[in-house]
Length: 51
Figure (cartoon, rainbow, N blue to C red):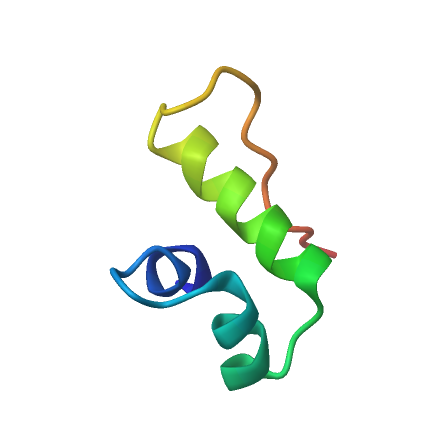
């Protein structure tokens, strides 16, 4: 997952954004969802959209 990659020692969020060719907001959202899933922050984990 992007959030885990971006938290590796020595890897900056900016480097992760460049490596995966994604927008900074996408990484931020992925990290937030990861924090919620890992119970690091209170909140509701959103489920992926399924048509």
